[in-house]
Length: 153
Image 1 (cartoon, helix red, strand yellow):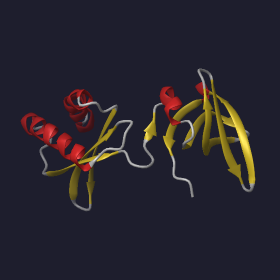
Image 2 (cartoon, rainbow, N blue to C red; image 1 turned 30 degrees about the vertical axis):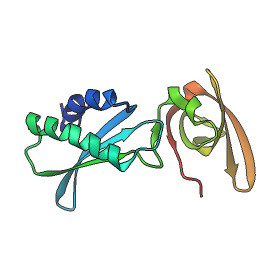
Image 3 (cartoon, one colour; image 1 turned 135 degrees about the vertical axis):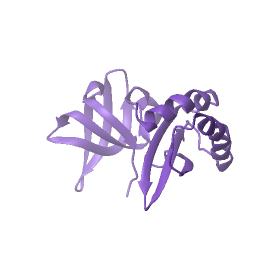
């Protein structure tokens, strides 16, 4: 088991018990410093106080487990503006600008970014721009293998 999976197995349950819906971990060396990033998510905006609360919760858990031999910086953060979306939770994001990766391309495209118009059990409707034209697509939900929020420029 790698460090990221080991850390996640230790801290995911306590974080989820605080009311967060998603937790991810990354461990990387950046410019000579190791960073253990713990990303958290919930439906509402995450405040700085919440970030501190999660940091204070997991820091002693990580210290006690002593899984990481190198010195590292613990960085608790939210997923940010382009947070991942679970495909089975797309309904929550109707009206939002999203990035969808498709397992079966739509008119030759396997990535679509646009406004999520409608979602039901089997169908997802999205409006996106192709140059100056507005295209409305109806996709099989099962054809979407990855989704995240996107930033509209």
